[in-house]
Amino acid sequence: MGDKMTKGDFTIKEIAKMYGISTHTLRHYEKLMMIQPERTDNNYRSFSEKDIYNLNIIRDLKELGVPLKTIQSYLENRTVENTTHLLRENSKKLEAEISLLKKKVTGITSRLKIMEELKTRENQMNQLIIRKIEERRAFQRLSEFTDEAGFEKEMRSLYGELLDVAEFYQFHYVGGIIDWLPPESSIYKGVFILESKLVSNQLNQFILEEGSYASYFYKGNYEQTSKYIAKMEAELKREHYRIIPPFYEFYLIDFHETNDKKEYLTEIQVKVEKS
Image (cartoon, rainbow, N blue to C red; front, side):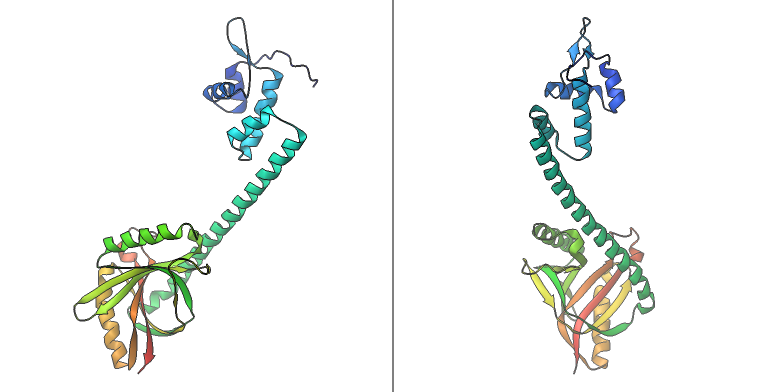
């Protein structure tokens, strides 16, 4: 096509249908001076070749995720140099988005793997297990509470503190930190989020030391924890193990995965050593 712009034959409804957008959107583009349709004798909009060119550019750049304000500025000053700059900047933005999406996919894949591994715990329900566990890193928030509402409040606060330093895909398990005061009850002294990816030198980070840990898996609501901690303590005493508090309550399957509390899966852990 030549440089000469001729009067178009398309109405606003035809253009809207052609580009799959609303007439309201076209009027908005016109208000922003991104297109400038002529008016017929009957005061209907008639779109020129220049309008068609601009609409093609708007469509293509929007598909690439370029903000409308940036497109507006670009249309007003379109040169080879500006086009090159725009495409390079958008390429960087898309690469960053792709990188983040890959990390999120990694997090989802990791969670699916964990869900599969948890199926193997079915034959370990309601029995004491002693196992060696490597050093683990976690984030914690220390604050006493005694019920599920208190846990949710503290966990929301911890997530809020961590949003600036970590993404959700870096988190592994969540749970409560328990001070055990038999025979009365268990009192939570805080909450934790176990990392699946190391984020060093960050706020509220602590280490679960390598060593021997006693574990107890159970299904059902959380109210059973005190009962099972008491049972663990009795069994460990019989086996001549010394408990090194605190207890850690891991929520392996909870309301994030199921509405049925009977399917909840909890692990209680505490570090131990032979007396």
